[in-house]
Image (tube, rainbow, N blue to C red; front, top):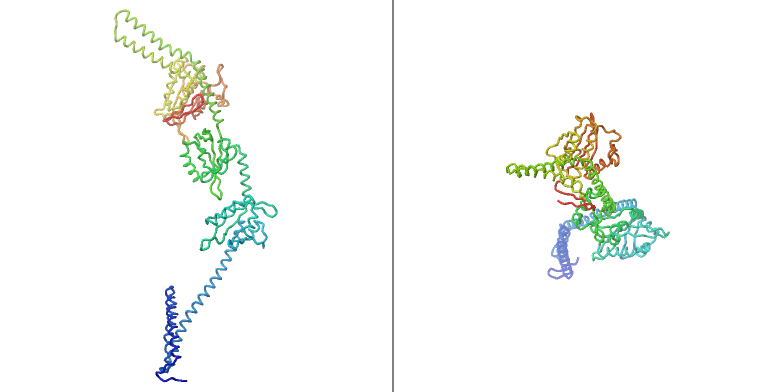
Length: 616
């Protein structure tokens, strides 16, 4: 070995010292960089080992210059440094190996997931697709290729795919795709396709767009479904709705009309183009619109097939502003797009006119029946009037005699005048009742006390009952609830039953001519009603004729018209009540009628022209 004298500079030593210094600076800079990036463990282990090794290497120039010998312990230091660096590098290798194993496992899971997705898509008849926008390449599953009629190896781009779409639907599909690419919204479209063999299919497409970091669309993924059968069913449904005799309107969950048939156009006077897409409230009269929206939202929470507004009169609004009476039925239809409601509407204008005409005829018949009944009671009525008139005449003559004799007794004259006034009121009351019965006027329904009706009828028949030697007993329930009805018509029903009862006992012994009138209250199946019954001691009614006696023109009297009981039952039906007959246990029969307990704060008036008014 060539040695240099001490104190003589060795150029190799200087060069090695400078190199070691630069390496040390590089290691320090690299360690600081790794530390700042957050990998501090690696900075300490690897960077620290390299820096420590570089510092130890600074003894090399001293060895070269012969100043020191190579220390024996340096080999162990270098061994430790190499071991630390080897550990760190082997850790990276092990970590990479673990990541590789996990990646392989993930690829296996991914393949299994993909197979499951393809199996589910196949079971659901879905065709999966992916469009690489930059390359303009479309990938389709086997099911997707079959849906559009593409060969297994055929390359597909957007124009090739678009060629399969029906010419009339291409523009709508293009707009849907562009909207998704520009806004990122979900792609949704339904369109027709024409296969190479000429077969036409309906396809529903759904998809979403994936974007690059710069905001440019990268690819679109989605699925396609053959909805041909559904569309055919919808077409058949439209044909059925169109052929329906009623007005039919389909309303979506937002309350907008989506389907209208010809009958709906006829009922409301709009064309279907004027109705489709608009809110159903445009067909509701303005006074009902505010509440109608609440009813519609309430129905959507508990949708079931049922009629609307049971017990209420419903009206629709025509285009010209006129209102038309209608009946409405609801049928909910649950679809993938939400709840739809099929509304069936019937124009009942003709029915209402017929009902009002029938009511007018019933009122006329009831009036004729009252006139006929009064004709039968004319003798008794004349007697009722003769009594107060005779009393008035006698009292007036007595007063004249007092005045003619010159012996005026003011107390006696005052008593005579009071009797005249009292008898005059009695005669006026009889005349008033006759005028009410004979007058052809409106039918008024308002709160009525049935006990008062019984008293009024007994006053009207008082003389006739005396002449026929009929005794009347009454059992009137106290504190009886009021019913809603027309008092004149209710008097007519009770009077007819009393007249019939008297006729039934015409051949009975005087002691057997007894009538019992009862009033009461009953509650059956949650319905409350006031009941009235008339019991006689005459003959029984044959069971086979128990219902026949209420038919028009059926009578057991020689001179009867056969309309009395028929009109009475009609009046009861108009009052939402019932009229029926039963045989007594021993002899005679009992006629019953019941009236539902009505509200006492309303008056219902039906005029002769059929117009109904309700007032508080």
